Image 1: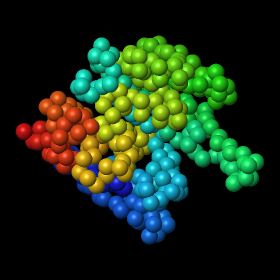
Image 2: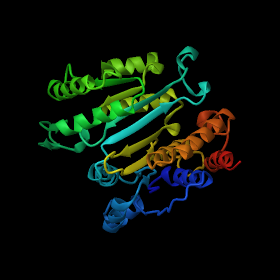
Image 3: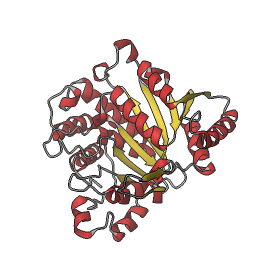
Image 4: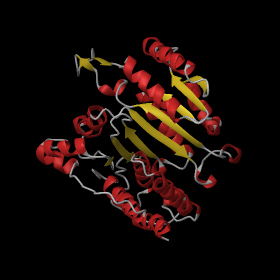
Length: 336
C-alpha cells in the first residue's frame, strides 16, 4: 500500500530490495490513496479491506494529502488498520549506523541501539470525547485517554519479551493519576515475574531528557500511545532523521503485521526523487523478520549500513543520490 506522497516513491524501492534479497513473496498492490478517497468517499474500499484482512503482512507507505483537511481519511486508513486488525504493538527501533548521522556529541553516539515499544490501540488516539458549543467562545473540547487492563498488560509483557537487558517504563503517573495507577500496577506485577531483566521507571519529561543526555543507556522503552509517538520521533532524530526511521505494527498472537517508514508523506519534497527510502527499506527488513526470515532481515540491514557508510545515500544523510539510486545501491549489495 504505497498510498500518498513519499510513500509512492519509497515502497517500490523497498520491494526492489526485497526481491534482490531473494524474497519469494507474492505482492499485491492496492489503490488506497487520496485520489481514490476523493472519488469514492471510502478510505479503504470494502473489497480491498477483505483482502487486507487475509494478508500475511502489509508494507505501507504513508497516508495524507495537502488537498484533504479531513481527519476521517487518516483515521479511515491507518488508524482503522491498527485498531481493527488489533495491531497493538508499535515497534520503533532506533539504531545508529554511522557517527556522522547523529547530532549528539561524539562521546554520546556510541552504540545507540534501542527499541520503543508503544501501545498502539488505546490512549488518546481512540477518538473518545467531543466538542461542546463548538465554534463559540464557550466551547469545551474533551479528549479521553483510554487505558484497559488488557491493553496495558499485554504491551508491558511484550516489552519484557523483547528486552535483552533492561525495560524502562515511561508514563506521567504523577499527573495522570488514574491511567498512571493502572500502568504502575501492571508494571510492578509483571516486573516481579521477570527478575532476569533490569527495570526502571521514568516520567516522560525525564525520559526525553535522558534520551538526549545519553541514548546508549536504553535497551527497551515501553509506554503508551501518545508518549511513544513523541519519544520515537526524538529517537529518530538521534540516529539521522525521520527518513531513516522504520516501524512495525504487529499482533504477536495473530501474526498480522503492518510495516511503514515513520516519515509520512513529506509533501514538501515528494515527487522530486530526493525522498530517503531507507526508512521504508528497514521497515521491509522488519517485515521479513516478523515473517520468520531472520537471515534475510539481517542481510538487508547490513546492506543498508554498508551503503550509508559508503556515503551512497540521499542528501539528508550527507550523500547525493536520488531515491531510486539509493534503492539500487542497497539492492546491489544484496546481489553481489
